Structure formats: C-alpha cells, structure tokens
Length: 301
Image 1 (cartoon, rainbow, N blue to C red):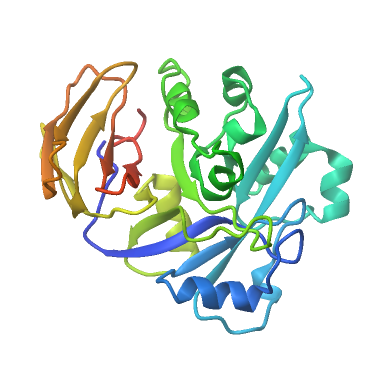
Image 2 (cartoon, rainbow, N blue to C red; image 1 turned 60 degrees about the vertical axis):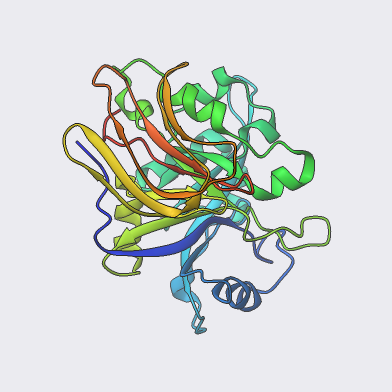
C-alpha cells in the first residue's frame, strides 16, 4: 500500500533536541525561539535518561514541544547504543532509567506505545549485527551534530541493512528514516537546523503528528523539499524544490536515477516501480549536495 498522502499541510520539525534537563546549553524558551524563527513547527525534547513532560510546562512557546527521551547503555551482548524514544512516558526519570538499564528502558517505551529510533549508529560505532538485533522503528539516516563532530553522521548504510532484512521480519523491513539535529547548542556542539523531518497532516497537534510519523507519511531533509508525491499504480511522480539529481533507491545495487552534471536543475520527475523490488524510496539532491529522503514508498516493505 502506497504510504504517502501529501494533500494536506507540510510541518517542519526535529526529533532529537537536548535542553538543560540533560546536556543542552540553552533554555527551552530560547531553543523554541531559534527554531520557530527559521520555520519550525514542532520539536521533540529528547534529553538523556529523563522523559520529558511538556504538559507540566505552563509556558507559551512559538512552536509545539513534544515528548521524548534519549536512552543509552549496553545490551546483554555488550553492545553500546544511543536510542531516541518518541512519545510520552512514565517511569523513566533519570534515576529509574539508569537503574533499570537500556533493555528494560526500551521495553518501557514499547509498552507505552513509543517509537524507538536507533540514533547516530555510525558515530556510536554500532555494527550492522547490533543495529539489526533490536526491532527499531527507525534509524537516523542523518545526524547533523555527529556530522560536525567527526563526519560520522550518515546512517544510510544501516537503514538499507535494516530495510533489506527478509520479508518475514516485516516490522524491521518497514524501518523509518529520520534526519535530525541532535542539537545541544553548546560551544563544543553548536550545530542546529542541519537535518529535519517534514510531515504532511491536516493540523499540527501531537496525536496527528505521531500518527503520521508511525505511518511514515513524512520525509527527511538536509536542504531540498518534496512538495507532493503520488503513485498511479505503476509510476511514482513527485514535485520538488530545484534539484540536480533524483534517485529511486532499491535493494542492494538496484536503483534508477535522473539528473545531469551540467548544473541544470529540475523540479519534477517520475519513476516506474519495479514490482520485484523488496523496497524502494526516493532521494533528491540539490546543487549544493544537500539531500532529502522519503521513507519506503509502500507500507510493509
């Protein structure tokens, strides 16, 4: 089933933001002002080891804050992870989270209907085996701060490994791809507004946004935009901001592409979808090399 409905309004947001509740360097109000000033509509508070509770915050902000947490630790096999949980959770104070450990904390997120996203796996040093061990709902395809720190912000290879699992593991073969900032806004981590998601929904409210994220009706970007994405049963067609390249990415070495090296830009393209491909998604690239990615175009693959 084709997953995209782009007939509503696009809202810009970030799924990985730190505040002074852990190691963020700027107050929540200032972070909100900064991001709203460059067109953001929502942000997730994902502080280390402590679940946020935005409903207890009586302040007014120029954008929507949503709840989350970042977990870190070793699993029973000794592999170290950072995992972002999206959602509102109880039982995950800093003391409780540290006491129970990573695996149990991830289970709490699952039991409370949260989403688990494998954070910056290349920066953390995760093996593909470690990335595939847990049933993550998503993975960070791009992490801006990790790109700044040592160039290891790209999680695309992990995403394709997760998507390439056998179809019997349907929950893993539907892994979502996220671009994010992981903003700390400290002198040693100054980056922000370098990676984000765009969600197409009728309204910017927490349940509506979370439902759209679960459904994969969003794209991730470091620059260019998708304006609409449609499928007629044979071809996917899409309109974008000016880009130099567009690709239909399939499993292993399979793919299709259009574009040129002369610098000519275009704003629309189409690809026929090979029915035998286990999965496919769109990638666009602008003249500055900034990219954007859809999720897999069809639910379940």
